[in-house]
Image 1 (cartoon, helix red, strand yellow):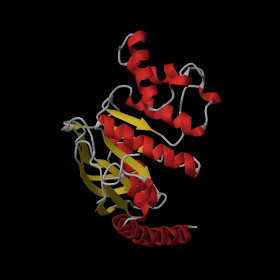
Image 2 (cartoon, rainbow, N blue to C red; image 1 turned 180 degrees about the horizontal axis):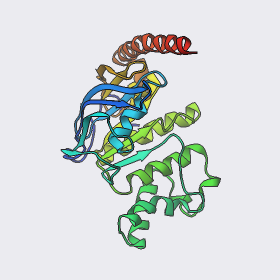
Image 3 (cartoon, rainbow, N blue to C red; image 1 turned 90 degrees about the horizontal axis):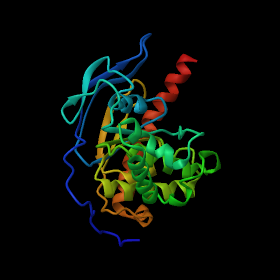
Length: 275
């Protein structure tokens, strides 16, 4: 493991992956406003975590960037182009792996390149390269049913990267994993992010996870979701578990905890009032 304080080793400065969320509101009707007037700019290569209480609109906001949800008002742009639908420039990793059970691990990862027009040999070569990166080369001919939860998520990450997107969107991808596997996945993800120089939006409700991973932690309020804090994490990279005892880590965690406690209590009161 590299020593504390070593600087990030990305091979180039990313030019793509610039995200502009401008006054976005998402109203599902019947008074159900999921996101309220959210504005956020994310620079190429940044790792940003969206943090907030359950039901605060974190996933909805991220899905406007993915193109799965359309804003009622406002706009979302990626590299200057307005997002209107999903695209190859944005890879997505869900909490549930959503792998094709009838395809091998290799063919699951190769699916995206094949759909983009690559030949089968080229697509599988891309898949094998990515599986090596996530440590699953030995499983390329296996089927998802024999993999552990953490292994399935590693395949999911490889599949999301197979079209070499400029943006990686991750919706609580490690939420169902045990603590040890989750910690391993976090470190593996940071290694991949470092290698690709990719922009990441990572949705989580876990404060420690957000502080450990992110350049910035963006905190959302209880419903309707507003952006109430944008906290820059002043920790050196590469990140290592020992940083959890550092002054900067504890300071950032405390700041996030205080905000989340207030918003979680407000969400609880809202739910009790409507019960």
